[in-house]
Length: 308
Image 1 (tube, rainbow, N blue to C red):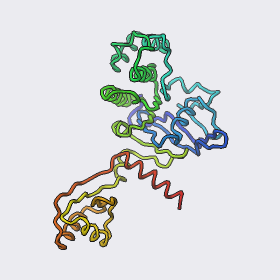
Image 2 (image 1 turned 90 degrees about the horizontal axis):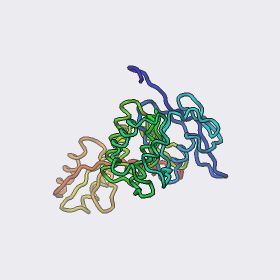
Image 3 (image 1 turned 180 degrees about the horizontal axis):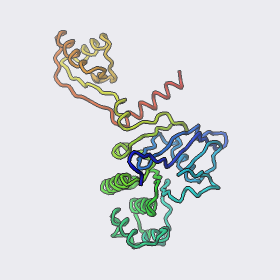
């Protein structure tokens, strides 16, 4: 347990690079995770998220850099630091003719029935845990995979698309378990394409594209960088558009009066401009970008920077 004011570094990845043949999959990846953090690893398909996770679990070789968990180096030939790590990568490895309970007993270090039963109850798996895994649905298998990742109270949990196949209630249950464990000091690195779920649990985001980290930020920092808009409906939208553009207001939609909010007093200036020119404002909506829109903007900015 960490003391007051003490920050414990669980994972350190420095200058990590990985090639698959001539293709550079990871380029100089650098980040650290602290005890109790929940960090979302986000980016498009093929960006390198799963490759990072496989590297830090010692599953693949890498050409350059270092990976340390609790100060111990990790590579395909050095696994000691993985003792305190639980993981679910891509799809859970399930033995079809074993029951879910057999899986948990097989991988449990303590073989303690109470520990296993508690985990089964938390994930609401009681009804089917004694059935053979070959009869499990995708969601049941996914929950078993998550249970295996959490089984031995690891300090670091690595989850690749953990919400795959889960119904809304199961998604909520897993979310609450992650938040609860983080409060007791468990660290999570999670990739997911369901960005709205990551937004609900993550302290930090690492945004990756084409094998490079293009931004690391907190949820608050990402929210502050989000664009805000006024969506206007007027008596003469086309004339309103011409006037607003002439006065240097930024309109981002070709079909709607979606004006980028740049200052707090901007709305009163817009209303005054339109009313002075005989245009009636019928409706005003305040719009904020969600996490997905923010991410797409960041990726677009990076793409534009590369092209310039």
